[in-house]
Length: 325
Image (cartoon, rainbow, N blue to C red; front, side):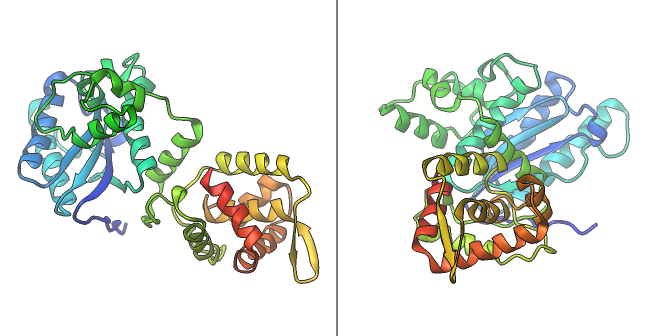
């Protein structure tokens, strides 16, 4: 199998994760976790990576990593190789422990960055090993809930976000949960998990949700040129969030129509088809199944969406309104 080329670079942020082969346990004791984190700390001290959030569970781990010099692969190879050798020796076993080298996804944009922190924090709660992330001792939320913590944990970025959100001059551990403690919505979680499961790396403009309409539309037009036979780009928004916002806009202006040549058509089905294709990466048949129409109808709508983005300012503003929600 061809290996994925990891997108890295100086200063890049990554959501890094891995799990045991065949979902076996890889962290079976407090000593295991400490040894793994000691290898992580070595790579932090050598300047290869920074760790800003983490969660270690019995079968897998999650890390929010900044790569100062673009050496993420070097660091994670050292961490995992050292841990597997130690684990195997201590259990008198041979063979692989993790299901692969590791997985990493670029983290771009303030909103997604914040949601990844919350996703990592929520893992122990979702696994039912803790009732609250701040009570789980093998995760960074435990340390952000106090002033103490390991020296290799880079706290400045997250503490800065908390202070800005609270308009505070000093970091207060009790404020962490107020800013990062809100549970992810189903749509927010779906976007992160879709990115984790995707084997395609295709960076998008940073924080596109907050971008000007022109930037949003340029991105949409580029994505709309994908043929149905190609593999769609990385999921950016969830299907549920797109359809929900289209429904809201339709409720405000149910009879909105757009013109293509001399023909007037309902605008919302065209926009929804285009967004499900470009922003959610669905195939034409998947969109047809959702909308209850033929695949050829969806294909026509997607082409019209691209055309109207070029020709109609009203259509561009409607698209930008939905995407900025």
